[in-house]
Length: 322
Image (cartoon, rainbow, N blue to C red; front, side, top):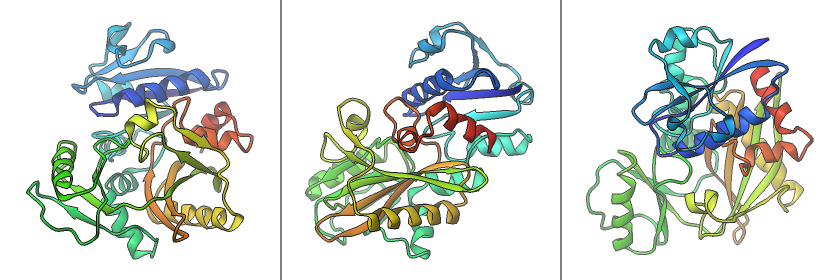
C-alpha cells in the first residue's frame, strides 16, 4: 500500500482555502489503496503531523492534536508521494517543488519551472503572448508610486502578479480608485498588473494528465459580485454552470487552447485554465492558470470532472497514479 502525504496550510493569504481543500481530499481519498498521513504548515512555517479528526481541519487546526516535525526532510522521505494541497505564496510558486527536487522527494503536480512560470501572471502572459494566445491588454508596474495615465480607458482591473483566490483584486473606475487599489495590491506582491476591464463570461476548463491529456467539459462562473473575487468565491452564493451554455465551436476553442497552454507552460498532472469571453465582441481571452486548483466542496475542478463520470474519489486516484 502506497504511503501518501497530504500537505496543507502554509504561510499564505490562502491558508484557509488550503485547509478546506485538504479536508475534502482526506475525506474522499481511497483509503483501501493508500496509507494516508496529513501534515499542516502553520503561518510561521512550522510543520506538524496532524493526528486529529479530519473533519476538524479548518483555520484553527493548530489547536487540535498535532505533533511538531523536527527533521522535515527525513520525515518526507518515508512517503511514496507528497500531495501538496497548498494555495498561494510561498509554497505554490515553486519553492516547495524546488525543495522536493533537491532532496529527491516524489510529489504530485507541476514541477519547479512550471510552478514558477504559472504563479507569476506576468511571466504567464509573456509566454502566452509569444505563442499568440489571445489576452486582454495589460501593463505591469513594479513601483508603488502614483499613477497618472494608463494606455487604455477605465474601468480597469488591478491584481497582484503573484497571488491566488482573487485576493487583492479590484476594479477601478477612475484614477483615484486606481491608485488606491494599486497600493492595496502591493501589500500582497511586489509586482502589480493592470488590465483593461471587459464585460465577459468567466469560463473554465479542467485538465487532467494521465497517460494522455484529458480535458473536462467547460464550466461557467456567474459571480454574485461584479467579478469573481474572494468574497464571491467563498462567502457568497455565486453560481457554477456545468456544462456552460456555449456553442460547440466555442467549447472546442477553449478545449484546444487549454491543452496548448498546459503544454507551453510545462504543466503536469492537473491544472485549471480560466478564460474570459467578451459576449459583445464575441472574443475569447485567456485569463490565468491554476496549477493547484481548489478541491473544496464548491471548487470547479472536481465538479467539472464529475460531469463526465469521474467522481472525486476516482479523480484523486488518477492524480496520484499519474
